[in-house]
Image (cartoon, rainbow, N blue to C red; front, top):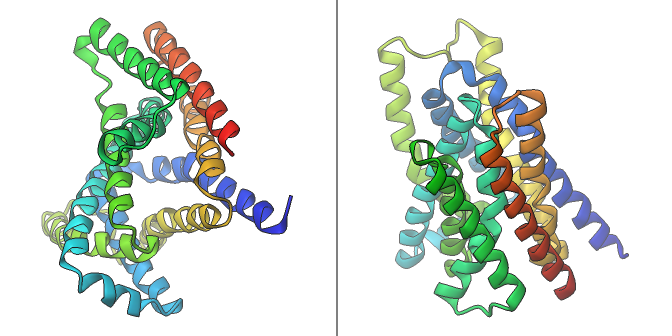
Length: 292
């Protein structure tokens, strides 16, 4: 195993661990401020941190090059909306003790991405991947058919928003950090206006009168950017195949935290559905392993 591969393996593992464990603990611990204010601060401080990192790594030339392309700018606006939806729903899930539902979304997301890749980019589907897609669809139908009053909407929105986000980003192929900065800048004005309205109505927890809490809230930026940087750098070193397998650390840890630490409800119906999904994931990972 060469040094680059070892380093890439370490970085993607750290990024996945951060998303699945550290990120969940942080956002759940700060969720008492309310998911709306938390989403607002995640958007605001992520944007500010990305501006700082872009300056530190001297990437403004790339930024100017991308924003001068109207087509790429339009697609980044769409991907910005998608990532905002993903962040908002995930924070809502964490804040309302529905972490298991969010993990459901991240378990099925890579397999949905395979389907979208076939539909939009004509990527080849082999027998194993087709079977994985069928199993995922079957597990969703079980949850929908037998539990109409409690549709797994959180997991589905998390999965499809992230899968379509990846699809749009794949179409334009821009620098990951700069792309995220532009997406964040699209969201930034709306987040700023929302923060103003929250503050004006006295509903804000972020305040200069409580510096420790405010500093803790600001961490929403680093908590978003750091794992992304780790994961993306790992992808650059070892490729999408191995990192696609490592990614499953994230939903696995989210599931473990949701069930064992936060004692979230896990019905027999969900258990059956998750078993089917895990079988689909194993088949998908086996296919990835054989191809890499």
